[in-house]
Image (spheres, rainbow, N blue to C red):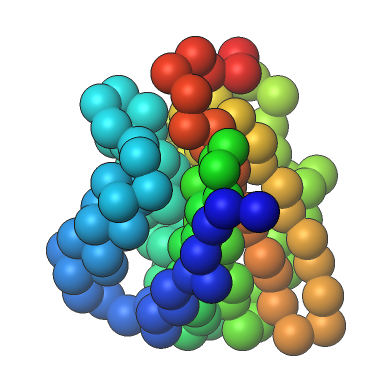
Length: 132
């Protein structure tokens, strides 16, 4: 299996540094163009959710194999679950559609809930065609 052991960083309010780390890792994995931009935007939305709704603390991890890049965002106290992903873009608000956006940008979005918090997993294939 081709891949890596990944990178892991604590989430803090220095979003620029976190995006630069993600950019570097995803680029080395072979992502580029719009798909890279989509992954960075989706991960940024997930990190903001941790800061605003998930207790303000968590971890961002990224790893890849021969076929995809995976970004995992965990928080320490959130109660996010898969049922919170809206099937359509909310239209009654100017905020609150980050989960919907993540589901549209990534090939795969999963959310798991555990006693210690929430885990959001974003996955993007390395080929050029989106799964949508």
